[in-house]
Length: 634
View: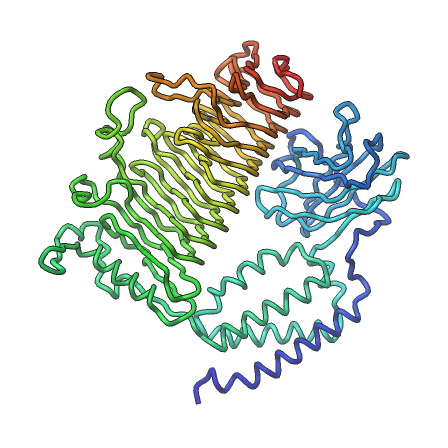
């Protein structure tokens, strides 16, 4: 009998014991909590709200006030949160009666500074006063950790630290019972068995669950551990992961091979590596295994002509492990007979993961001299150049760790995708490379881009029409044109909503954060927040431009415009190379509604006085320098 078959009864027995152990542990535990709890005392580490010696990281804290809370509060509120390793961030006072913070059914967002943390797993609030403020929830965004939300929705007792502690150390400490011991033994046994199989380390569910382990409560810890074990058993039981290597299909990783044509039929000519990669992709896409890995091996450099990898595919998930380098041809003739707008395209593939420490090199230097210039010359003759990576109609997409350099135009385009996560990648092109956007998002929903370095000759990230629920955090941008919404409205009706940009740094960029729309457009952009942004020698830190026309010739003069509303700039600080640091140029007919600037402090690099400019912008500002007196009433 095969080893897998002989281990199945043992695994079944172990799984039954594990379930019993978990049930026993849950019943025996006395520290399981489902609501925030009071804390008799809290050891405060006195970090401060400003950047100091012990304040190396910034955090964005968003607090929603319950609709059951008083209309407004004069209570004094303190906040403390941290991880399981003793790193704590303490804000002695976050209430601000002058700005009417913590109003009923409202959300307030703060940027606080403190020691860098791992996954945040506890939060406590301290209230003193007589109004009886009731928070609904607290969400914390940290540079090195996932955003985490702690639910309250109960009145906080006065003069008491009140909150949640989901740190795993508590769970382990409180679980010193037979159930936990059996669970630990079971885990060890399963890991030993699973080590015989290559698929375990690639269990996507296991990876995602382990990322959350450090921030869950005791009861959840038992449940999630059970799910981890279940994932492991499933991986061992089926061993249903198949691995393909492009080398096995004839790919040559010498950085040169792909110049010799291979005749497929009378009228179709392909090239060596192009043929090998597409053969490998066909094997991956048609595999009967539920999970498939395509390996681009390390210490190899594959010259690859423009190619498209299409789905839908049979496997439930596909993982492209990019350990080597993939480079584009260094001659434009490689695109003869092919569309010049794309190098590598992935289309109609769900549950696709692209990760590794390899490099995609677009060799854009051969295209940049003829890139689109902002003048009145023919767009048809100028705007040629392929985007490095295009993902079209790819749901549940994950991109991790890879580096994309020297794209001829945009480095990554997401179009018509849903549930996308991009993290820990690097995008690099010279600051004078025209139209080399870092990441362009259009027609896509539920997109998360975080903890990445982007240096380009255009927008680091641009959110286009049809996009919603986009979260951007931990981005270092520069050189480039900052992070933009738009441009919108050039092609007619366009919509963007629910975009949050947090904890990002712009350095030496042409623009900081901006919204740009064309005259004559229709649609709307709403519920957009820029929070916890740092500017370093930025040319135009904050811009709303509803007269966008980069060529500055033959520009429209049209009263129609994309409607902008609910735009927030909060917790922003830094320096500008320009004296005009805030420019809110809204449509003269439609205008912008409900703009908020809160705790925005921007100064001139040269020490010159700075100022703001407005056109038909409605909203308010608090604790902002320069004062935005040109804002019209809401």
